[in-house]
Length: 183
Ligand code: XMP
Ligand code: MG
Image 1 (cartoon, protein in one colour):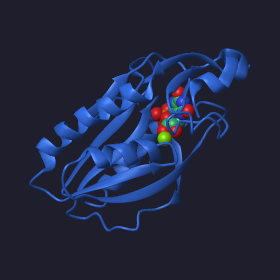
Image 2 (cartoon, helix red, strand yellow):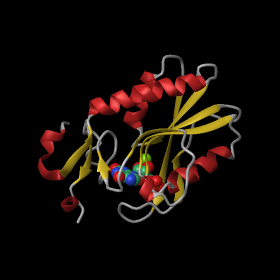
Image 3 (tube, rainbow, N blue to C red):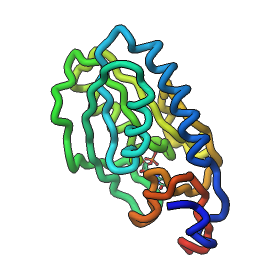
């Protein structure tokens, strides 16, 4: 779906699909420089990271493997609480594996902080994080994230896998949702 089809649901486009793809190609090069001599397992967080994973993994010039986790953050509306429940666990035993978490967005950081400690308790050989978007002003906990696509303002964004009420994930661009959509 193109932004033009959305009428006034979007306030404005933040990144076009071309900008997103170009940035993921760059991140792919950075990541490969660090992992070319290791077997990396990419761990995506459902559902938001589906499109980031699809494009990032194809930007990597060698063999990688992939697994998925689904979690729910208890919390109201558009805010996460940091109390997390696993809805779908990994199929892979990650002990002694080089794990790279692939995320769509770090907002408060609470969800990813929980996932990070949970995966660390399984004794991976290494654990790093790649996120397409990060909202520095929204951080409630500092997360050491090695690969960041774009730092964005503290506004609710949709598209490219990111949803509002499960909608807009299939929008090609990333845009700021118009405030009238959720008030
Ligand atoms: P935090 O870092 O606050 O974020 O624990 C948890 C999850 O909330 C979702 N999220 C968003 N989804 N637009 C979205 O569509 C946003 O601006 C946004 N901020 C947070 C996302 O799934 C993230 O993993
Ligand atoms: Mg997410």
